Length: 199
Image 1 (cartoon, one colour):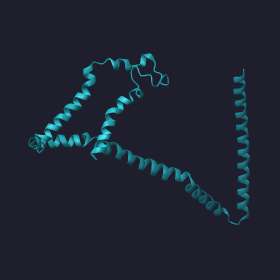
Image 2: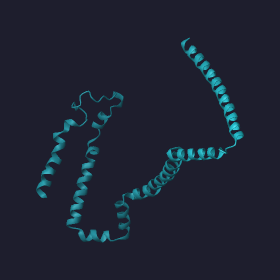
Image 3: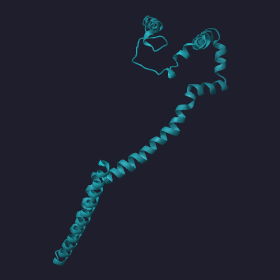
């Protein structure tokens, strides 16, 4: 594994220098005019003139951490082990190792509530409730109920049939009259609206 890692380390170190023109930076003309930024929103010039210490601070922290870790694990292992076994270090280590308990807080307070809400509201109430009652199952049961009631109206007596025929005729005439008046009113409103737009 040492030889492939050595080759990868060389590429990791040199790839930034070899492809520096690909990155959007101050003075880089690789992208040409394909990415346009208004002058008042162009902050890269301000970034370029940040003092040198702030630019080198990430590198300094990385090298300092690497040097401390090397000396700690090479020469001060007993001292480091005595620190690791203390109760306060375990608390800090668990806190940092478990990502500040962010995942636990997120899972217990946000994710579990969202899952239960989606199960109760989306699945049980909407999908298995409203959609199923208004969808195929509800339509089948509604049609079955209607035709069961209609079937119970069939008694074989002639006056029952005449009564149903009479009531149906009155209902159809009422619907035709009401719908025709509604259509006339709607067409007149549409005509006035179109005339108003054209004028």
